[in-house]
Amino acid sequence: METDKAVLTGNGDDERFEQAVRLLLGGELVAFPTETVYGLGALATSEEAVRKIYRAKGRPSDNPLIAHVGTAEEVGRYAADVPATARKLMDAFWPGPLTLILKAAPGVFAPSVTAGLDTVGIRMPDHPAALGLLRRIGQPLAAPSANTSGKPSPTAADHVLADMHGKIPYILDGGRTGIGIESTVLDLTADVPTILRPGAVTAAMLEPVIGPVNGSAEAAEAGAGAPRAPGMKYTHYSPDAPVFLIAPDLAAIRSAVGQLHADGRRVALVAPEGFGEAGADWFFRAGRPGDPESVSADLYDALRACDGTDADLILAAATDETGIGRAVMNRLGKAAGGRWFGERNE
Ligand code: TXA
Ligand code: MG
Image (cartoon, rainbow, N blue to C red):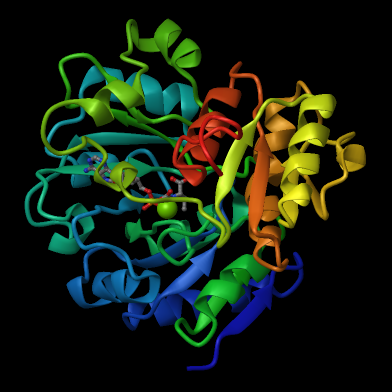
Protein backbone atom coordinates (compact mmCIF):
# COMPACT_ATOMS: atom_id res chain seq x y z
CA MET A 1 0.00 0.00 0.00
CA GLU A 2 1.22 3.50 -0.85
CA THR A 3 1.27 5.89 2.11
CA ASP A 4 0.41 9.44 1.14
CA LYS A 5 1.49 12.27 3.44
CA ALA A 6 -0.62 15.40 2.95
CA VAL A 7 0.90 18.54 4.41
CA LEU A 8 -1.73 20.92 5.78
CA THR A 9 -0.84 24.39 4.58
CA GLY A 10 -3.95 26.44 5.36
CA ASN A 11 -4.48 26.63 1.63
CA GLY A 12 -6.45 23.92 -0.18
CA ASP A 13 -6.81 21.90 3.03
CA ASP A 14 -10.50 21.22 2.34
CA GLU A 15 -9.49 18.70 -0.30
CA ARG A 16 -7.03 17.04 2.07
CA PHE A 17 -9.71 16.72 4.75
CA GLU A 18 -12.21 15.41 2.19
CA GLN A 19 -9.75 12.75 1.07
CA ALA A 20 -9.25 11.75 4.72
CA VAL A 21 -13.01 11.58 5.30
CA ARG A 22 -13.50 9.47 2.13
CA LEU A 23 -10.87 6.99 3.24
CA LEU A 24 -12.24 6.76 6.79
CA LEU A 25 -15.82 6.26 5.58
CA GLY A 26 -14.46 3.51 3.31
CA GLY A 27 -13.08 1.71 6.38
CA GLU A 28 -9.43 2.78 5.95
CA LEU A 29 -6.99 4.22 8.50
CA VAL A 30 -5.89 7.86 8.53
CA ALA A 31 -3.25 9.32 10.85
CA PHE A 32 -3.83 12.86 12.08
CA PRO A 33 -2.18 15.29 14.49
CA THR A 34 -3.58 16.16 17.91
CA GLU A 35 -2.17 18.53 20.52
CA THR A 36 -0.57 15.56 22.32
CA VAL A 37 0.71 13.04 19.74
CA TYR A 38 -0.39 11.81 16.30
CA GLY A 39 -3.39 9.47 16.32
CA LEU A 40 -4.12 6.53 14.03
CA GLY A 41 -7.81 6.98 13.26
CA ALA A 42 -10.56 4.61 12.18
CA LEU A 43 -14.35 4.87 12.29
CA ALA A 44 -15.11 3.81 15.86
CA THR A 45 -18.40 2.22 14.78
CA SER A 46 -16.79 -0.17 12.28
CA GLU A 47 -15.30 -3.38 13.68
CA GLU A 48 -13.52 -4.10 10.41
CA ALA A 49 -11.88 -0.66 10.37
CA VAL A 50 -10.91 -0.77 14.04
CA ARG A 51 -9.28 -4.19 13.63
CA LYS A 52 -6.97 -2.63 11.06
CA ILE A 53 -5.62 -0.36 13.81
CA TYR A 54 -4.58 -3.35 15.94
CA ARG A 55 -2.96 -4.96 12.90
CA ALA A 56 -1.08 -1.86 11.75
CA LYS A 57 0.28 -1.20 15.26
CA GLY A 58 0.84 -4.80 16.32
CA ARG A 59 -1.23 -3.87 19.38
CA PRO A 60 -2.43 -6.48 21.91
CA SER A 61 -6.17 -6.92 21.47
CA ASP A 62 -6.96 -6.45 25.17
CA ASN A 63 -5.84 -2.82 25.10
CA PRO A 64 -8.84 -0.53 24.39
CA LEU A 65 -8.75 2.57 22.21
CA ILE A 66 -9.76 6.18 22.87
CA ALA A 67 -12.78 7.49 20.95
CA HIS A 68 -12.19 11.03 19.71
CA VAL A 69 -15.07 13.48 19.28
CA GLY A 70 -15.40 16.87 17.61
CA THR A 71 -17.99 18.27 20.05
CA ALA A 72 -18.84 17.72 23.73
CA GLU A 73 -22.57 17.39 22.91
CA GLU A 74 -22.18 14.05 21.14
CA VAL A 75 -20.83 12.38 24.30
CA GLY A 76 -24.46 12.01 25.46
CA ARG A 77 -25.01 9.61 22.57
CA TYR A 78 -21.90 7.53 23.17
CA ALA A 79 -21.93 7.19 26.97
CA ALA A 80 -24.63 5.36 28.93
CA ASP A 81 -24.24 7.87 31.72
CA VAL A 82 -22.65 11.32 31.71
CA PRO A 83 -22.19 12.25 35.38
CA ALA A 84 -22.08 15.88 36.52
CA THR A 85 -18.33 15.51 37.13
CA ALA A 86 -17.86 14.66 33.44
CA ARG A 87 -19.83 17.75 32.35
CA LYS A 88 -17.72 19.97 34.60
CA LEU A 89 -14.49 18.48 33.27
CA MET A 90 -15.57 18.82 29.64
CA ASP A 91 -16.42 22.49 30.29
CA ALA A 92 -13.11 23.11 31.99
CA PHE A 93 -10.67 21.06 29.88
CA TRP A 94 -12.16 20.27 26.45
CA PRO A 95 -10.97 20.53 23.85
CA GLY A 96 -7.78 19.35 25.53
CA PRO A 97 -5.52 16.53 26.72
CA LEU A 98 -7.99 14.83 29.06
CA THR A 99 -9.57 11.44 28.28
CA LEU A 100 -12.62 10.54 30.35
CA ILE A 101 -13.49 6.90 31.03
CA LEU A 102 -17.29 6.59 31.10
CA LYS A 103 -19.84 3.77 30.92
CA ALA A 104 -20.27 3.08 27.21
CA ALA A 105 -23.69 3.32 25.58
CA PRO A 106 -24.56 -0.18 24.38
CA GLY A 107 -24.29 -0.91 20.67
CA VAL A 108 -22.47 2.26 19.60
CA PHE A 109 -18.83 1.29 19.43
CA ALA A 110 -17.27 -1.58 17.55
CA PRO A 111 -16.39 -4.24 20.15
CA SER A 112 -12.65 -3.84 19.55
CA VAL A 113 -12.74 -0.16 20.60
CA THR A 114 -13.52 -1.10 24.18
CA ALA A 115 -11.69 -4.44 24.08
CA GLY A 116 -14.61 -6.09 25.83
CA LEU A 117 -14.92 -3.57 28.70
CA ASP A 118 -18.27 -1.88 29.43
CA THR A 119 -16.50 1.48 29.61
CA VAL A 120 -15.07 3.74 26.92
CA GLY A 121 -12.40 6.45 26.91
CA ILE A 122 -13.53 9.63 25.16
CA ARG A 123 -11.67 12.82 24.41
CA MET A 124 -11.99 15.96 22.32
CA PRO A 125 -8.54 16.93 21.06
CA ASP A 126 -7.41 20.56 20.93
CA HIS A 127 -5.92 20.72 17.46
CA PRO A 128 -7.40 22.40 14.38
CA ALA A 129 -6.59 19.43 12.11
CA ALA A 130 -8.10 16.87 14.48
CA LEU A 131 -11.19 19.01 15.06
CA GLY A 132 -11.48 19.80 11.33
CA LEU A 133 -11.48 16.09 10.57
CA LEU A 134 -13.83 15.08 13.41
CA ARG A 135 -16.36 17.81 12.67
CA ARG A 136 -16.41 17.02 8.96
CA ILE A 137 -16.97 13.32 9.57
CA GLY A 138 -19.44 13.85 12.45
CA GLN A 139 -18.73 10.41 13.94
CA PRO A 140 -16.36 9.22 16.66
CA LEU A 141 -12.89 8.14 15.57
CA ALA A 142 -11.02 5.47 17.47
CA ALA A 143 -7.43 6.63 17.55
CA PRO A 144 -4.52 5.29 19.55
CA SER A 145 -1.12 6.89 19.14
CA ALA A 146 0.07 6.25 15.57
CA ASN A 147 3.24 4.32 16.50
CA THR A 148 4.14 0.68 16.31
CA SER A 149 3.09 -0.82 19.64
CA GLY A 150 5.91 -0.43 22.19
CA LYS A 151 7.66 2.45 20.39
CA PRO A 152 7.54 6.09 21.49
CA SER A 153 4.38 7.85 20.28
CA PRO A 154 4.78 10.01 17.15
CA THR A 155 5.08 13.76 17.61
CA ALA A 156 5.71 14.48 13.91
CA ALA A 157 4.30 13.13 10.65
CA ASP A 158 7.69 11.63 9.78
CA HIS A 159 7.56 9.53 12.95
CA VAL A 160 4.22 8.17 11.75
CA LEU A 161 5.67 7.50 8.33
CA ALA A 162 8.63 5.64 9.84
CA ASP A 163 6.28 3.24 11.68
CA MET A 164 3.27 3.08 9.32
CA HIS A 165 4.85 3.31 5.87
CA GLY A 166 3.08 0.86 3.55
CA LYS A 167 0.52 -0.01 6.24
CA ILE A 168 -1.88 2.94 6.02
CA PRO A 169 -2.98 5.02 3.02
CA TYR A 170 -2.96 8.57 4.41
CA ILE A 171 -1.30 10.86 6.93
CA LEU A 172 -2.50 14.41 7.59
CA ASP A 173 0.70 16.32 8.37
CA GLY A 174 0.06 19.21 10.75
CA GLY A 175 3.67 19.67 11.83
CA ARG A 176 5.02 18.86 15.28
CA THR A 177 2.54 18.30 18.07
CA GLY A 178 2.74 20.76 20.97
CA ILE A 179 2.42 18.82 24.22
CA GLY A 180 4.37 15.79 23.07
CA ILE A 181 3.04 13.12 25.44
CA GLU A 182 -0.35 11.43 25.55
CA SER A 183 -3.48 12.72 27.29
CA THR A 184 -4.30 12.25 30.94
CA VAL A 185 -6.67 9.26 31.30
CA LEU A 186 -9.19 9.79 34.12
CA ASP A 187 -11.54 7.01 35.20
CA LEU A 188 -14.90 8.49 36.19
CA THR A 189 -16.45 5.08 36.79
CA ALA A 190 -14.34 4.51 39.93
CA ASP A 191 -15.68 5.54 43.36
CA VAL A 192 -13.09 8.30 43.46
CA PRO A 193 -12.08 9.67 40.03
CA THR A 194 -8.74 8.01 39.33
CA ILE A 195 -5.89 9.03 37.05
CA LEU A 196 -4.96 5.89 35.10
CA ARG A 197 -2.33 7.63 32.99
CA PRO A 198 -0.78 10.97 33.98
CA GLY A 199 -0.60 13.71 31.36
CA ALA A 200 -0.70 17.48 30.91
CA VAL A 201 -3.92 17.79 32.94
CA THR A 202 -2.72 17.08 36.48
CA ALA A 203 -4.52 16.12 39.69
CA ALA A 204 -3.82 19.65 40.97
CA MET A 205 -5.73 21.02 37.96
CA LEU A 206 -8.62 18.54 38.27
CA GLU A 207 -9.29 18.88 42.00
CA PRO A 208 -10.53 22.49 42.01
CA VAL A 209 -13.14 21.41 39.45
CA ILE A 210 -14.39 18.06 40.83
CA GLY A 211 -12.88 17.59 44.28
CA PRO A 212 -10.56 14.79 45.39
CA VAL A 213 -8.88 12.73 42.70
CA ASN A 214 -6.88 9.58 43.17
CA GLY A 215 -3.73 10.75 41.42
CA SER A 216 -1.77 7.59 41.72
CA ALA A 217 -1.62 5.76 38.41
CA GLU A 218 1.00 3.53 39.99
CA ALA A 219 -1.47 2.54 42.70
CA ALA A 220 -4.05 1.70 40.05
CA GLU A 221 -1.51 -0.34 38.14
CA ALA A 222 -0.21 -2.17 41.18
CA GLY A 223 -3.74 -3.04 42.36
CA ALA A 224 -4.86 -6.64 42.40
CA GLY A 225 -5.87 -8.19 39.10
CA ALA A 226 -6.03 -6.51 35.74
CA PRO A 227 -4.59 -3.01 35.47
CA ARG A 228 -7.32 -0.36 35.14
CA ALA A 229 -5.79 1.15 32.00
CA PRO A 230 -4.88 -2.09 30.25
CA GLY A 231 -2.34 -0.29 28.05
CA MET A 232 -0.16 0.69 30.97
CA LYS A 233 1.00 -2.87 31.67
CA TYR A 234 2.84 -3.23 28.37
CA THR A 235 6.37 -2.14 27.50
CA HIS A 236 6.08 1.33 26.12
CA TYR A 237 7.87 4.29 24.69
CA SER A 238 11.03 2.22 24.11
CA PRO A 239 13.85 2.80 21.67
CA ASP A 240 15.89 -0.24 20.56
CA ALA A 241 18.79 0.11 23.01
CA PRO A 242 18.16 -0.26 26.75
CA VAL A 243 17.36 3.00 28.58
CA PHE A 244 18.64 3.95 32.04
CA LEU A 245 17.50 6.93 34.06
CA ILE A 246 20.10 9.25 35.49
CA ALA A 247 19.97 12.41 37.64
CA PRO A 248 20.28 15.64 35.60
CA ASP A 249 23.73 16.37 36.97
CA LEU A 250 26.58 17.08 34.56
CA ALA A 251 29.30 15.58 36.76
CA ALA A 252 27.27 12.41 37.40
CA ILE A 253 26.52 11.98 33.71
CA ARG A 254 30.16 12.58 32.72
CA SER A 255 31.26 9.95 35.17
CA ALA A 256 28.65 7.45 33.94
CA VAL A 257 29.70 8.03 30.33
CA GLY A 258 33.35 7.59 31.35
CA GLN A 259 32.57 4.25 33.02
CA LEU A 260 30.63 3.02 30.01
CA HIS A 261 33.37 4.08 27.59
CA ALA A 262 35.92 2.23 29.71
CA ASP A 263 33.74 -0.84 29.09
CA GLY A 264 33.84 -0.15 25.36
CA ARG A 265 30.19 0.84 25.19
CA ARG A 266 28.71 3.60 23.11
CA VAL A 267 26.26 5.93 24.77
CA ALA A 268 23.37 8.08 23.59
CA LEU A 269 22.23 10.77 26.01
CA VAL A 270 18.72 12.23 26.13
CA ALA A 271 18.88 15.29 28.35
CA PRO A 272 17.97 18.96 28.41
CA GLU A 273 19.96 21.77 26.85
CA GLY A 274 23.39 22.20 28.39
CA PHE A 275 24.28 18.51 28.66
CA GLY A 276 25.98 18.33 25.27
CA GLU A 277 29.32 18.54 27.08
CA ALA A 278 28.81 15.33 29.01
CA GLY A 279 30.94 13.32 26.55
CA ALA A 280 28.23 10.99 25.25
CA ASP A 281 28.67 9.62 21.72
CA TRP A 282 25.30 11.06 20.76
CA PHE A 283 23.38 13.83 22.49
CA PHE A 284 19.69 14.44 21.83
CA ARG A 285 18.36 17.55 23.46
CA ALA A 286 15.04 17.24 25.26
CA GLY A 287 13.89 20.65 26.42
CA ARG A 288 15.46 22.95 28.95
CA PRO A 289 16.51 22.21 32.56
CA GLY A 290 13.76 22.91 35.11
CA ASP A 291 11.14 23.25 32.35
CA PRO A 292 9.19 19.95 32.17
CA GLU A 293 6.84 21.26 29.46
CA SER A 294 9.74 21.76 27.08
CA VAL A 295 11.08 18.30 27.96
CA SER A 296 7.65 16.79 27.24
CA ALA A 297 7.50 18.47 23.82
CA ASP A 298 10.89 17.02 22.73
CA LEU A 299 11.00 13.70 24.59
CA TYR A 300 9.70 11.21 22.02
CA ASP A 301 11.58 12.81 19.14
CA ALA A 302 14.78 12.47 21.18
CA LEU A 303 14.05 8.83 22.16
CA ARG A 304 13.27 7.99 18.54
CA ALA A 305 16.49 9.65 17.37
CA CYS A 306 18.41 7.11 19.48
CA ASP A 307 17.23 4.39 17.08
CA GLY A 308 19.24 6.08 14.32
CA THR A 309 22.48 5.51 16.26
CA ASP A 310 24.68 2.51 17.13
CA ALA A 311 24.39 3.23 20.84
CA ASP A 312 24.65 0.20 23.14
CA LEU A 313 22.84 2.05 25.86
CA ILE A 314 20.77 5.20 26.37
CA LEU A 315 21.01 7.47 29.39
CA ALA A 316 17.91 9.60 29.93
CA ALA A 317 18.04 12.53 32.35
CA ALA A 318 15.27 12.67 34.95
CA THR A 319 13.15 15.80 35.20
CA ASP A 320 11.49 17.31 38.24
CA GLU A 321 7.97 16.07 38.83
CA THR A 322 6.12 19.38 38.95
CA GLY A 323 3.17 19.82 36.57
CA ILE A 324 3.58 17.70 33.46
CA GLY A 325 6.95 16.53 34.85
CA ARG A 326 5.13 13.72 36.66
CA ALA A 327 3.84 12.40 33.33
CA VAL A 328 7.25 12.81 31.72
CA MET A 329 8.81 10.71 34.50
CA ASN A 330 6.02 8.14 34.11
CA ARG A 331 6.92 7.70 30.42
CA LEU A 332 10.68 7.74 31.02
CA GLY A 333 10.22 5.22 33.83
CA LYS A 334 8.43 2.89 31.44
CA ALA A 335 11.00 3.41 28.67
CA ALA A 336 13.68 2.45 31.21
CA GLY A 337 11.71 -0.36 32.81
CA GLY A 338 12.23 1.59 36.06
CA ARG A 339 16.03 1.17 35.98
CA TRP A 340 18.43 3.89 37.09
CA PHE A 341 22.07 3.92 36.00
CA GLY A 342 24.32 2.56 38.73
CA GLU A 343 21.50 0.75 40.50
CA ARG A 344 22.58 -2.65 39.23
CA ASN A 345 24.87 -4.00 36.53
CA GLU A 346 24.06 -2.27 33.28
O1 TXA B 1 -3.19 11.77 23.74
C1 TXA B 1 -3.73 10.68 23.54
O2 TXA B 1 -4.50 10.16 24.35
C2 TXA B 1 -3.45 9.98 22.21
C3 TXA B 1 -4.01 10.85 21.09
C4 TXA B 1 -3.89 10.21 19.73
O3 TXA B 1 -5.35 11.18 21.36
N1 TXA B 1 -3.99 8.67 22.18
C5 TXA B 1 -3.47 7.65 22.91
O4 TXA B 1 -4.12 6.44 22.73
O5 TXA B 1 -2.53 7.77 23.64
P1 TXA B 1 -3.48 5.05 23.19
O6 TXA B 1 -4.39 4.02 22.63
O7 TXA B 1 -2.06 4.98 22.79
O8 TXA B 1 -3.65 5.05 24.75
C6 TXA B 1 -4.93 4.87 25.32
C7 TXA B 1 -4.80 4.52 26.78
C8 TXA B 1 -4.30 3.11 26.98
O9 TXA B 1 -3.43 3.08 28.11
C9 TXA B 1 -5.58 2.35 27.26
O10 TXA B 1 -5.36 1.18 28.00
C10 TXA B 1 -6.41 3.37 28.01
O11 TXA B 1 -6.08 4.61 27.39
N2 TXA B 1 -7.85 3.13 27.86
C11 TXA B 1 -8.60 3.26 26.75
N3 TXA B 1 -9.89 2.91 26.98
C12 TXA B 1 -9.95 2.55 28.27
C13 TXA B 1 -11.00 2.07 29.14
N4 TXA B 1 -12.24 1.88 28.70
N5 TXA B 1 -10.69 1.81 30.42
C14 TXA B 1 -9.43 2.01 30.88
N6 TXA B 1 -8.40 2.45 30.12
C15 TXA B 1 -8.65 2.71 28.84
MG1 MG C 1 -0.06 4.61 22.67
